[in-house]
Length: 319
Length: 312
View 1 (tube, rainbow over the protein chains, first blue to last red):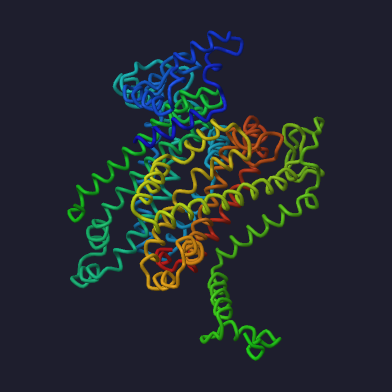
View 2: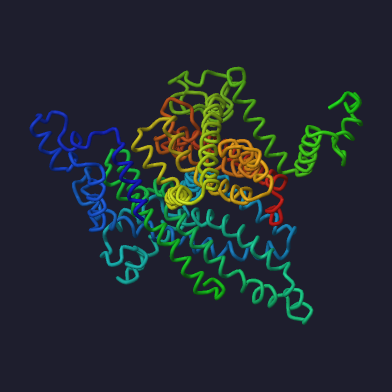
């Protein structure tokens, strides 16, 4: 955690932009410059500055955004639920399709299902996501008109629903506004499927290799000899044993989606943390960039710890 | 190697010389191993497709000036956004009337440039950190591996974004940013290999002969780490290409008017609904190249790293 902050701090320091000039503008007099320089604590040793930075972050203070002069933390709280919503639905899609696909591919090794799964995964690894998003928009929105376009909801529905959780799908249900809900669904389905496809590629590959390992174990032969149905052998015996590593894989891919959604969010004008960081970046708003980076890194670390804990919880051998 | 063992001129004896079970010299054994690995590689159709794609990419990049039908920077505002198959513009033209095919061909050079630079910087840095950490051990190991963990904990694209933001946009900075985010896995692999090698008998033997740590690491540990690193590099290439294209797409990599594929998609994005080919063609190029790397990487892993080949 400390290291994470250290890196963002260093990045902030090696920025070729003078932070004082950034605040004051280039025409400030020398006295004002010096005063601000002191006020920002830049005259102190680097290590002291670093501790100030940690202190601020621990108190939830990432500084002010230079773009809209609001605390960065408020902005992040506002945009984070959008990303969360997208990544969660993406992961659900990836798990629901990817896990069965991986299991079947392993059981029927070498069959056309296995080959298909392999191709699906390879294409998933090789496709630039922002391009696939553009093509998806072109086909399903531009030509077929099946789904909503960019953004979270249509322009008529913006700010109609009171914010409770920040997740628009949940908020609209809580408020009983079903038309908003369906509109939001039509907007989220395409970007979420895209992200889902990426986690599907990863999850199905991992599921397959876990399953192959289990299926060649002796207890599977024993179960078959006992005359158990194939269904029970595959799903109850073999699948039961891969649940634990699978949870780790899913947690990792979930974390990956939370960050990997940067490009997707830009394509779909999705007001999440990815587009927040990028917008800030393009306008040289360093506080916002670093704040966003710290938050994403934090989520990443937390999910890792969480999956470790789950691992210990489900697997009695890992003490 | 004495003259008597030299292979004859006919192809058959070359083959038997290479396939021999009883190599007569070190070099002979090396060539035989290489050839047999190549045979395994050749038997995998998908791998050969991947290799073919990459050879094609390299040739295209080398002979770009000969192959390109037009100057990639020549604007022709009269012939803007021409569709596919227009006369003289096989893949149409972009918003400034530049020939898309020519831009794709020149873009191959940029892609190769980025990939080669990252593939040189990141693994070497990782190899260095990993072997030193693994060989020296103790306090050095702890510190170096902590640093590696920190970098690993960061999501790659976001970290690269932050680095580019700090360094400024541009193709060299994109290369640096991607390398900075790409080296930790190599360090991990190299360290794991070093730990297993360090305690082996032949290292003790070399030590008894009076070799210092520098010689042991560079001459006796690095060569053994190479094969697992190569597999990892090939598999990583696709990710590097996608990351570079992503940065280019965000306007943080190669700057216009450079025909970088990601930047081309970003340009074409504004016209996607009416002029789909402008953004689609560079995307296809990225896809094909990274698919090629993935296919080749899969095959190489089967040959060089038999431990993992069971699940592929």
